[in-house]
Length: 311
Image (cartoon, rainbow, N blue to C red; front, side):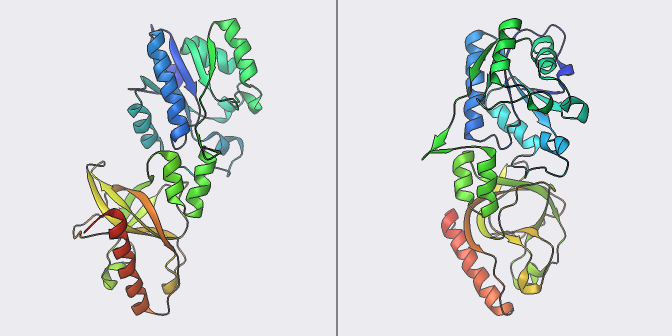
């Protein structure tokens, strides 16, 4: 898959393409259906498939400080998009200047002049251009003018719930990582670098890897989870009991994500790793001393082992 930074990166002699456009945060099952449809139609038409996305999230530029929690960082998003068979991922820098681009200019500059779209696949609520003035009806009219077709992206729902990034963020925020995984089609993941913490876990007999996450990362609700720690770019997958919270037993204030890797004695400091959340075990609790805390941690680890299928 080719990765372009900006539509100006379109190479000379670029032919026709089938394009889908969106933030695609999470690349969830709904996104997968949309992108998959675009890839399939591109192959039928004998053209290349292009996914256009934006960085940073448009909300952060249009309404500074309102950045929604990020389900997938850009690198992870690219990996997931590539796995769907896409030919090109075009990441458009979403700047204040770009946000003021009129809807008609958005279509002409990106879809017509650069990507030479023959087909555009979007959802029924798709909006584009300055102040989100453009809608699907306008896109279809412009398609008739410039010679590209517009098709609806298929919706993906389960038990009357339509999967969306907003829905998944809400599930993660509540700690319901199982529901989030069902909508994502895979476990919710956090990525970051392992940094030095208080080293209290080691003193208690449960050493932890303290993860420094992206400031806008979608961190699950405070509590304890069963999951997996992935290192070496996912080539090594280790079972873990994961704690999210402030360590109230020790009057902690800083919210942290810490993973106790089961049956592991190595050093992870400085490594960039990922955590996949498999199941919620319990909420955050303040214990009256170290002994009841250790007893509970032993129970947590035992439950995590059973859930993860670790003997």
